[in-house]
Image: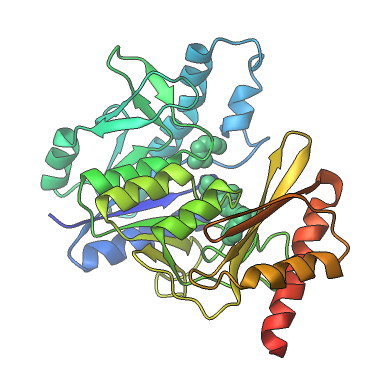
Length: 332
Ligand code: ADP
Ligand code: ASP
Ligand code: MG
């Protein structure tokens, strides 16, 4: 049976208009002879009542034991799966809400940051064979002791990719509020470009260095299952240009992208060069110098050129570096 996993982030399930788009995309998949397996995150962002951080705020997060807080925050995705399923049913789609455990997601014992060790797809297979559309709560699973655990922040991506891997799906589509993976965060950097074709390894390096559009573990599951992983915009047609992650990177950019992540009280900025183009490192070094960006502990590892900079100036540094590198490209 052909399946396509479609995952919706928190800001993609919280309005009637967006849920209409979820139904439309599910119908598209059904029309092409496959069944969508929908994965949902908790609705909205703080202070929206059922968002993960809102649920956390009900208790004293720092003091609560991890087992209890996992039990609490797993409810956000459970609420979302029922809301989305009920909505799909009113639109004529035979949806079937499931918790992570009901979908057979088995994890290790690390509360708050559990890893999926296996998915027993038997119940899902049964639901799918009845022609129903499963709507699975992301971000959660159960360990061998029957405890509910969550998969780390942003972990619904991991649920989706792992389901795609264990169901041998045709593709995993990650729907979010941007068109795909860009050369830098399009919400904070001007002039970013969409990266339409990326390899698992390159996107994994980007996700690990702070490009939070995808959870790194999601990329690992997709790679292990050799399932194409697509990042797409919830509010646009499925045919709109987006990012497809597979075996190779194809890009006409001078560099792949820039990401940043905090390291102690500093911020590490990483510029991803193109594979086979490591001579770009001198171009990056001169762009850093030209913009007067402070750069300590410079490291070059594979396609990643990274350095430490002051956290206060890091956002501006990313924007300036992105602009300069783009200009070098377009002027040459
Ligand atoms: P969701 O709730 O749908 O999982 P996330 O907030 O986890 O959404 O991820 C989407 C966000 O990732 C975007 O809104 C964007 O601001 C951010 N982001 C960071 N780096 C990148 C990048 N390189 N390309 C695209 N988006 C990025
Ligand atoms: N709701 C969880 C979070 O906020 C999981 C996710 O959104 O992927 O981290
Ligand atoms: Mg996310």
